[in-house]
Length: 178
Image 1 (tube, rainbow, N blue to C red):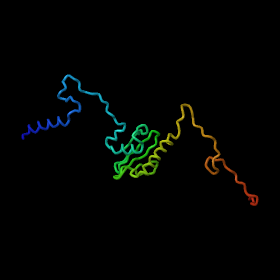
Image 2 (spheres, one colour; image 1 turned 30 degrees about the vertical axis):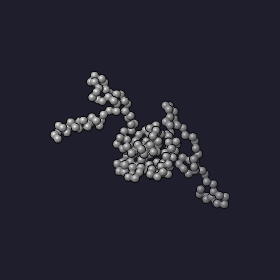
Image 3 (cartoon, helix red, strand yellow; image 1 turned 180 degrees about the vertical axis):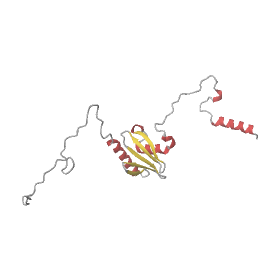
Image 4 (tube, helix red, strand yellow; image 1 turned 45 degrees about the vertical axis):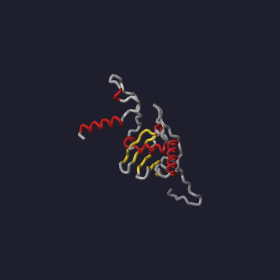
């Protein structure tokens, strides 16, 4: 078998393997007919999933496949151990750490090993609480407004607290020099 025969066989096999599903083959289409089809491609909101596909599965495990409204950004934090920071819409964040056995979710300082069902549920509950309670701590005042703090007596002995006079007990003598 020569090189040319081998090339011809490969071309024939490629055409058979990649034959379109429709009854018309590419060879049957006339040259003047526009073959392009406008099919929208689903573009990922987070391009990091292209480099780390298991990360998407871990996030879907914690948040459901409809995770996009809850996450604003995913950042690659460290290469070893592979660590990602997941930024939520309420400016809170949690970390996902890859280990050879499973993912570890670090939410509000506590680590949850997602291999165990109980810890996975606890991580989901903690994440739900964080989404529920999280938010901006203080809203910025509008133009011309200022934040006024109420007058507070405070705790005696603290700086800025009113001084409390100590009265000596009746049995004590008051020195004359005082």
